[in-house]
Length: 220
Image (tube, rainbow, N blue to C red; front, side, top):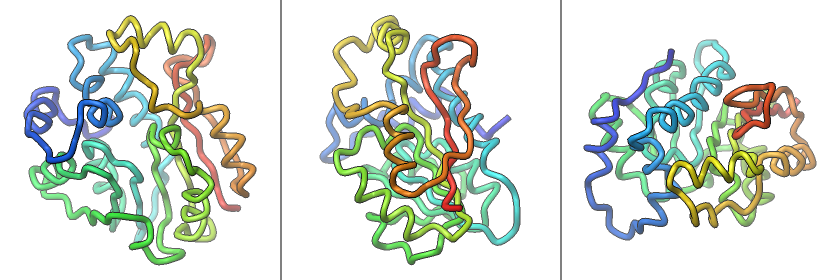
C-alpha cells in the first residue's frame, strides 16, 4: 500500500482558489477524478500510483523528480523512499499545502533547467506527457538530468474506445481535449529518443483493453 491522501483532505486542499488557475487547469490536474463521488473512479486513479510505486526501486542516497506533480499526491510516497525529491508543476499551490501538512521537504522548482545534469535517479511523469505539445524538448532535458542508469516512469491513457466510454460514464464527456497523444504513441516517441523500454503494466486489468499503461524506461 502507498501513502494516500484522504478524500476529505483532497477536497479541502483543492477548495482554495489559486490565482490564474482555470477549471480547465483543474481538469488537467485530475482534481475531479480524485475527488469523484464514485469510488471506482478514485480507485483507478490511485491504482496508477500503486503500480508506479512498485517501479521505484530501493537504495540509499537517491534523488527523485516528479514532473507535473499536480496536487502532489505521490510526493509523500517519494518522500518516504528518496533522500531528496524535486517537483515541477505549473500550479504548485495545492502540492505545497499537502507537503506542508505532511512535513515533506520537497524542492519545488519552476522548470527542469533548475536541476543540474546527472542529478536524478528516477523521474516520475504520471499522466502528464500526453499534455505536452513539445515532447522531444522535455525528453532531451530528462536525458540530461538523469544519472546514467536513471529511470523514467510514465503513466498515460490509452484513449481507446473503452477509455472514451469510461470518460463519458464518469461524467467527463467533452473533456480531454488537452490530451495531444496516447500512451502507445508515447512509448514509441520515448524509445525513439534513445530510452530503452523496460516494461509495461496495463491497468486496471491485463486481459481486457486497458485504460492506462504504466511504463518504465531506462537510459541503459
